[in-house]
Image (cartoon, rainbow, N blue to C red; front, top):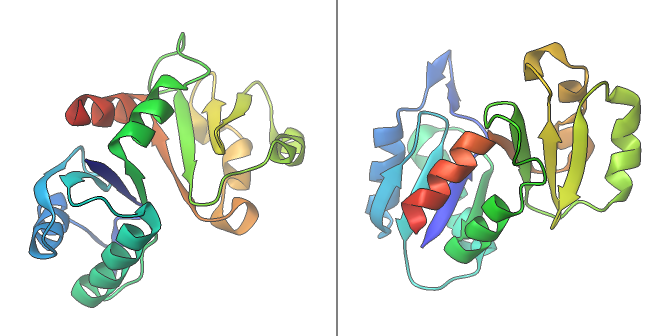
Length: 172
């Protein structure tokens, strides 16, 4: 079992990707038991054991061919996703206020120092190379979001804890 996360569901021209189209594309690639969660680019599927990076490349190439735009795709194995979900350092907070930036290349602890100048009341932690943030309110009202970009941190995508938990339930 694997989890794939799209960095963006925008396919240009103001159009958003429909999750049914993403699921259908994955099924045409031979992935099995494809299921999506919410409309933010989350896919759970089965395939033969493969390195996550290989699956990412296949999905990225197929996405670009099918939808005409490159979108970064991050893939985690089922066990790795369950570990990520269990590693939430802020479990006492509401799931919509806590987010994780799932990274292709693990972040080092030094990133915390780089983010400090953007941080207000938020709590931040790196767990197994992924960046967890407790926004202590609305993420849209914080300066920290502007620092959580691919240009500054590398390829990654943000999901809230509710989505992380929902995907974990789908793969159990």
